[in-house]
Image (cartoon, rainbow, N blue to C red):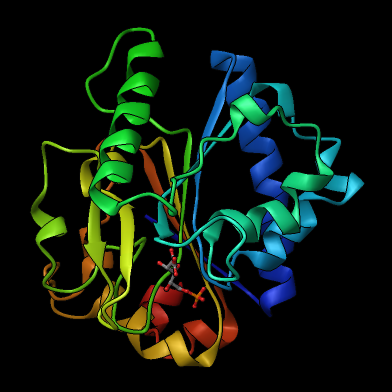
Length: 249
Ligand code: 6PG
């Protein structure tokens, strides 16, 4: 696991955009495909907007990119809360990616039905891998961190945290809003997992996740531990403020 601390949110987004393009080039060259699961929330918006800029967009082999989501709110794609809608408006509309390569979670459908459909999509992704694998292997999973320690839509003390036999499940946010989320096996099978976390409000939880007592059921982000892949935390200074010198080192 590695930690990169950037001066501010803009520098964090620029660093992530740079590395996103490199990861896409590497995966496309090595395996003919870059399968990435996007995160939702506000933090990745700046990164997504950069991906629409020619300086980054021209470096991404979009024909080889397969876009998925790590979670979704159970709302239609045009709802302001939609994670798909966030990405669509920030960059999907502006880059040459085929519709068939964009695998959104159908937030507008009944949650159990949408989760089963996405589980099937992810099994299809796994089946395309050579050699064949059981769990889909993403080249990159982007994650955010909630102030309560959730990531994707894996919330504290949720039944979804223990699911091993499904790759996507319906769940509920603490405010009662229905969500869809990939499960821990999918995240932990990825070649790269990146947390993008910014702002002083997250500093306490960042320190809790990285240096606090390990209780993944209460702090789901602590359950992110790629089996074979790499885990990188991209933090701005504000979010890193409560880390010890050792952790910062
Ligand atoms: C979502 C995200 C969620 C998010 C965190 C952080 O759908 O909201 O997937 O896990 O990453 O809640 O959100 P912010 O970036 O808005 O702080």
